[in-house]
Image (cartoon, rainbow, N blue to C red; front, side):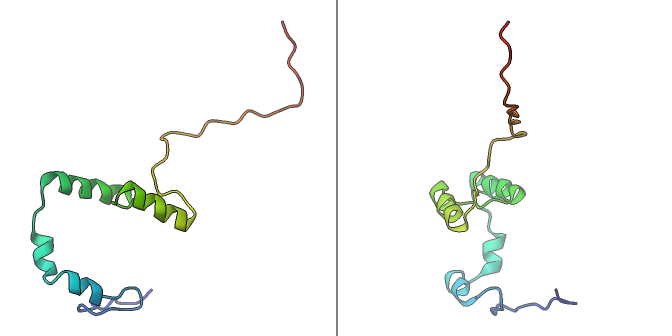
Length: 93
């Protein structure tokens, strides 16, 4: 960590290369100020709160395979408890 972060002023640094992004988006301020359609904006807002990628499911699955972990949401709630095998049979009544 650094004492005081310094602005990059549109240049790349050790974490990111800015040139490819600048080539795609000429006016970042206008892009951020633009309002999209409500359905897209709602998807983006939901994605910001869950911390998962906002991409096609196929892309997310491919990235998960590359990372060796699941990026898709799992089933909610606690995992079922596994019953302990005591090695004894229960008597029939």
